[in-house]
Length: 282
Image (cartoon, rainbow, N blue to C red):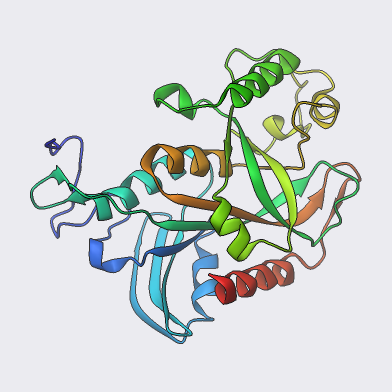
């Protein structure tokens, strides 16, 4: 398969278009964060940094931590950005960029998201750490991809669509079992709802009337798959990981409790604790 210059866009130096990376710039183990400023927070723990670059919101640092070569990349917010990041990371290892052809033998990356999230459950305390065992995509990204779903995943998606009365079926995808056992074995296990926005799609009320009545209550009472927390990227990661063949894990620092309307006063400390835990276990 040959990829045209319009499909696979490269910069003049041969790097992929948005991330501005070449294959030698990334490690097999990749940590992703939403906030560009958080890249330096992660790499500050590195013993050495061999490479740095930035283009738009995409900041990348690659270096060594206790003799392990790691890459940390910022993605910005939302599954639209995740779609760019996942496709370009995959291109770096599974496409010969000079020949513009897919490699005969594919490789799998280990990609671990470190992010913040708000919980829907009154029983999950602020500043706890949660692993997304399953992610539910309340966005339309998978309307444009062929995502393989199990019978049970399809059933859950249809039930949630009916409950919320929305015009598309949400998708459900699971995390890498191996990465969960390696990194998240002592974290709270939850089912994460990935939303297409921060305000109305997460039940926040500003200067408008919400379209879906009793939205948070419907999510809290959804019995087919208890929903533990909200955020804006995980389902996109898990779905594209399944499609492209990469190992995915999303970890969340719980900084808000929507059931109690509370917010952490030590969010940065909680995030730092999560970063150190991941670096030591990856």
